[in-house]
Length: 61
Image (tube, rainbow, N blue to C red; front, side):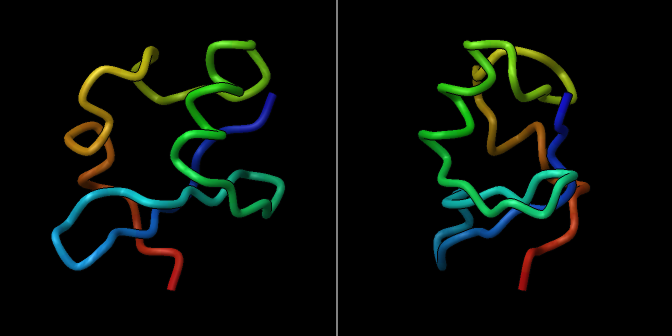
């Protein structure tokens, strides 16, 4: 199962994209859909307040 390894944030600090362990760059919305389908593992599970859950993750760019 893929996992999140990095994030891309907009100028306001909100997450707009994720990088997965297989190197895919996917949108926030696509990541939530895949997590709900069980094909992508979020580190803390669920999609509630994702911006706070990824503070320690490196930036994609």
